[in-house]
Image (spheres, rainbow, N blue to C red):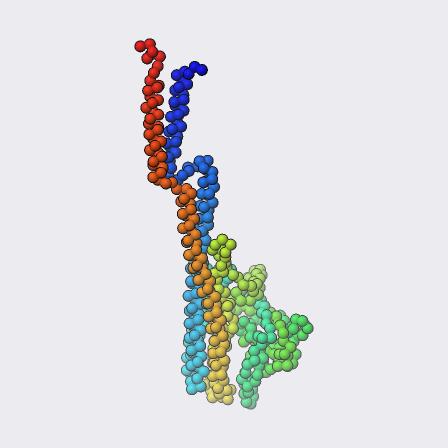
Amino acid sequence: MRITNNMVSNNILLSLNRSKYALSIYQGQLASGKKIQRPSDDPIVAVRALRLRSNVREIEQYKSNAKDALSWMDVSENSISNIIEIVKKARGLCVQAANGTLGTNERKSIITSLKQLKEQLANEGNVDYAGRHVFSGFKTDKSLTFTKAVSMDYKITEKFTKDDVESIKKIVNGSPNPRVINVDRIRLGYSNIKDTSISKLKIDSTSGTELDVKDRLSKDAKAYEPAEGEVYFLKDTGELIFNSKDKGNIKDITFEYNKDKFEKNDLNPIHYFECDHTDAIGNITHYDNKRDNISYQVSYNQSISINALGKDLISVDLMRDLEEMINEVGKVSQNGSKYDDLLKDSLGDKFNKLIGKIDKHKDNLLKQQADLGTRINRLDLTINRLDDDKVNLTDLMSQNEDIDIAEVIMKMKSQEMVYNAALMSSNKIIQTTLLDFIR
């Protein structure tokens, strides 16, 4: 086989190109710090790199979620701590007011303080994080309590059991002498209610036992003394008054009523009750009384509930207890009548009962605080684990992608020597031409 000069030249150029390409690979690795420049260089390394990079990005997103969740929960925890302090102060005021030696003026001063604490409770319920109300469930754009007096039409549904029937003593300003009577009642979520469309109240869904519903006001004669088979609906105080003989037949009650005026710091019904809101043009929006738990995904197949619900913290009963005591003291005048004397004498007992109720509210708040605290601790542990996972995966990613600089430099220098030697030898071979033989 005849070997021509062109064949020799082409072979030399091909070998030089291969040697230069090998050199360029090491130069590219040294410049980028990575083993491969494109997937085709090493598909196995490329696939593993994509998977590890994806895992690192997921961990970074989980950490971002966890930190956002932790900030939300820190705001909630601080607010719950403030609510607990408010309730403790309210209890202290009730202890002072229960002292029989205090006069009406001193008790009224205490009531003024209770009003301020009640208002601060409402403010704590409306605390927000990044413009979102933290105690409002999914309805983060709606405050837990009204920040001003509003006129809005709501049809509210409340459900009760026999355990919700409360027995209290009531002072009736009868003629000629006032008297103290026992009253069996269910207290609704609001006072100053517009009306109800219910004329028959079913007190046992199983047997179908019903009572006739009669509208009354608390100042009406015998407003707290319904006849057997009747229930009085007191619109101004928001109470259902039962005859003692009907009390034993109560098992479960569903009561619907309409309210169209709300004062500042009143609870927003959409967070507490099943209700229907009718807007100015007649559109109806229905709200379910369900638990809205906001969950963040903070790790692989791991979610955590970050919120506490306002109805578990600032409950209907807590706000109504404070409101009722404020109203009771407001009834006492200075005219020295027997009715006023009975009211004054009863205030100590009522404050004592309020102390017991506030203790239950405080215990519930402490339980909610402990629950949130355990979730915060769990989240802290998750964040620490995510930090460790990121370090491990980043190390694996580095082992998979990054070069050993010393090794690459040695290989590049070796390949550079090969390339330079090839250039020198090729130069001598290609120098020989036909003219050299003619000479």
